[in-house]
Image 1: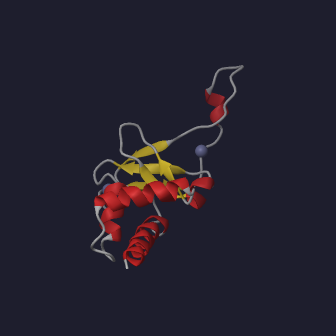
Image 2: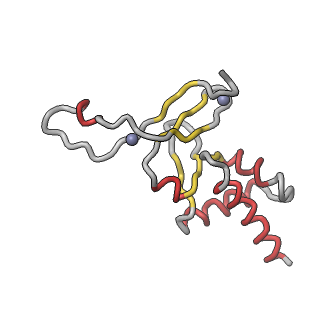
Image 3: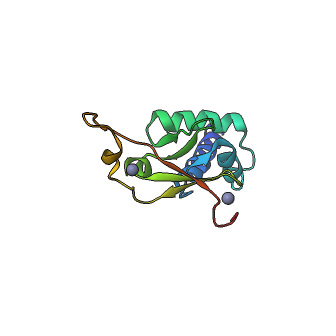
Length: 126
Ligand SMILES: [Zn+2]
Ligand SMILES: [Zn+2]
């Protein structure tokens, strides 16, 4: 019975992250997963998220001075960027990339990777 309960909780948390369509914070994952399984606690969310991260099913999205968000590793594998709404604090995926960043760096430097986070107001907050 305890195992069954654990599985139900894990499934609800996994589904919350994989089907959100944008990276979710721990608080958002808790909110979303308790809609289907109200007994889920914050501690359970942390435990399951750590497990899903170890199993490489989900990937952390880190932002400076922000709590981590989580997205599916499948989404993370496709190069994309994020938009952070500074009002509701939600993070959204942005398709595409400005590219041509090589032009910004000094001669002789080698660009290996980049992070880019756009900030502003989402459609519901604007
Ligand atoms: Zn917003
Ligand atoms: Zn890019």
